Amino acid sequence: QKKVVESGGGSVHSGGELRLSCALSGIDISDVSVAWFRRAPGKEREAVAGLRRDGTTFNTDSVKGRFAISKDNAKNTLYLQMTSLKPEDTAMYYCAAVCQSTWQACLAGNFNHWGQGTQVTVSS
Image (cartoon, rainbow, N blue to C red; front, side, top):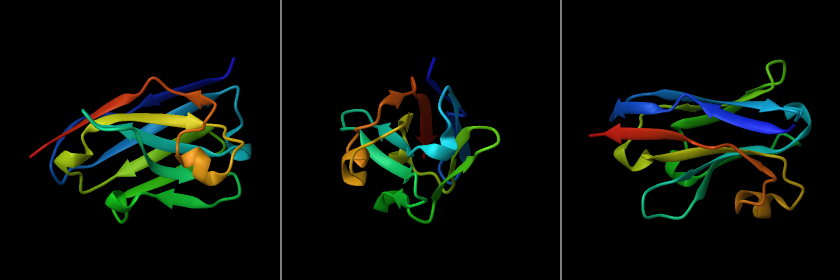
């Protein structure tokens, strides 16, 4: 069974840090595209960071220089290191894996497997 499970969310003050983890089961992370998305209250889901199968990375403008996506193939786990967190980063964060569309379509949400989400709350 293919599963994607996030962890690591929590509540921090502005300027704080968190590291999200995404454990994949039944999916070889070394062979697929993966990404982090978020949905803030009252807003549409957006791609935060992505790691394409060929190594191409993506970071949305609002997190450039603050968030970093990485993976550990041996642990079959995806990470999102978040630093200098701001209240506007408050959202439910989702891990997504396996996309066979164009990268643009992938970042629009066309992934096959999604986690349940982990909440990140940043207070000022």
